Amino acid sequence: MSTIGRWLALAIGLCLPAAPAPGAVEQVSIRVDGLACPFCAFNIEKRVKTLEGVPGGARIVTSLESGVATFPWRPGVAFDPDAVRRAIREAGFTPRQIRLKATGTVRVAAAVNAKGLGLIDEATGHGLSLRPAERADRRESWDALRAFAGADRARGIRVEGEVLSEPSDRDEVSWQLVLHRWSPLEFGAEVVIGVDALSCEGCSLRVMQALRPLNGVIHVEADHETDRVRVWTRAASPDVAALRESIASLGFKAGHLHTRVPEP
Amino acid sequence: MDRSKPSRRQPASGRASHGSRECRFVKNRAGAILTCLAVLAGSARGAGLNTDVALTPPKDGWILRVQWRYSRLFDDPTPLDREVHRSVQPITLVYGATENLAILGTVPVTYRKIEFGSGATQTDTGVGDITLLGKYRFFQEDKPGQTTRWAVIGGLEVPTFDDNFSSESFDPIIGTVFTHQRLDWWIDWDVLYKLNTAGGANGDDELRVDVAYSHRLVGGESEITGPWGLYAIAEINARYLTDGSAQAFGSPGLQYITPNLILEAGVQLPIGQDLKSPRLETDYTVVLSLRVQF
Image 1: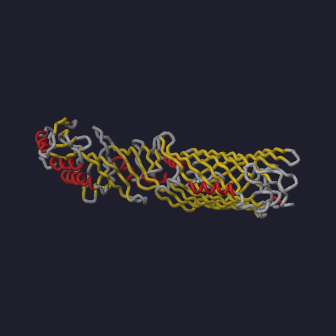
Image 2 (image 1 turned 135 degrees about the vertical axis):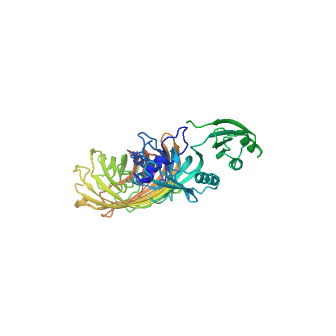
Image 3 (image 1 turned 180 degrees about the horizontal axis):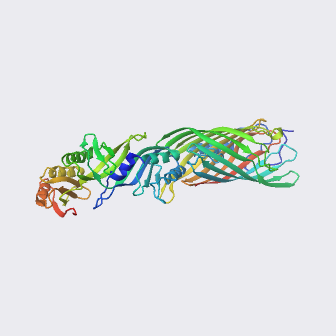
């Protein structure tokens, strides 16, 4: 099993459940070149089903139009990108970019710098460097993550995003993280505020920029699709009124929904 | 042998009677026009209806192809004035030994009814010679939604020593197959040469050239079957024997393709035939075919 595979299975976290659990790859998508007819799709299915990490009876979805094969990955089995690429070759096609969906926790044990996020698997000591994908709309989130890791090194974080292999046409690849959002694992309280008319990405950005400098705030994520703002604070009893006032000062109507404190 | 003997038998395909056995290449316009129309309309896909050599399963994968081919042969240059109705069920099994090497075996189960000019008939059933081929892909270039592949083929036709349908000789076969495939269309081209070691009257070597073009008419991605497509296919199948005989066919057809099943149907119509006695001309061939992958 490759170092990267073992590490990915343990350390990349997406969509963290309430109680942090060991990380695991849940779904694999791989772009396949040379896929040009419906009969070819069976070849992919036949070889992918021989992989140790693919559950018996799993549905392998192969799209001719997008040239992507998607399949589930068995919990507890380390992800091995080399085995996946080999299976695609044995099916008669050329493997390209791998995209992973995983669940679990990430513990920041190395510095986050301009090149990306350095993460260590606590069990094995192996490291994985994730470079930020070139997504301008996520730069704010990366900057906040770097600032957090710089000040609170070794604190746990929860990452939501996608892990991509780059470049896509070689076996030796680095891994990119398309960061959707992140949150700290250790905090005093998580405050959820409903905001009316949080209608666009720009509005969300303005709210995050307004709340982040406030005293005691660790991290802020604003989601214009759900009209929710989540604020993680150091104090167990944060000043919710100050948070609401700060949002109101931007012209938005804010209402406190609830505050959650982590279980001991 | 009188090569210009008028034939009592008429073609059933509706074409004008040839009346003589002089070279008729391109004289049969029906097949040519049908093929050209199908090609122009955009028609063919990986492994045509009338050749097996483009079939390629994945490593450790299998493809089973079962066909039913009915042909009417006529225009007997001999005094026997034969008309033959032939039904062949070639059963082809292909195994992917590696991602680049496939092993093919074909067993043709054949039924034949011969009607003589005298009114007598004769029926025969048997198993023709077994074709065993190895195909090695030496070139592959994949891009998003398209692929180009080239393979060499080598093998042997193994005699079954059937009294009616076997050459009773081990005949080596060599060849090559080229495929370019895209989402909306593909083209296959293969050349095969069979060295006939039998000698005698039936000892002619055979050169085969097949070109198939296929075009996706309609397709989609279903929750149940996965990706699927209905393809129109047009082939040109040419055959040359070292006694100087030559035949070329235009073969339009349809293929319904899913990930593990292909249903196919088509006809083979002669574009031109120049056959040495005592060979019979082919009036038409109807082909029904099923391919499954497992």
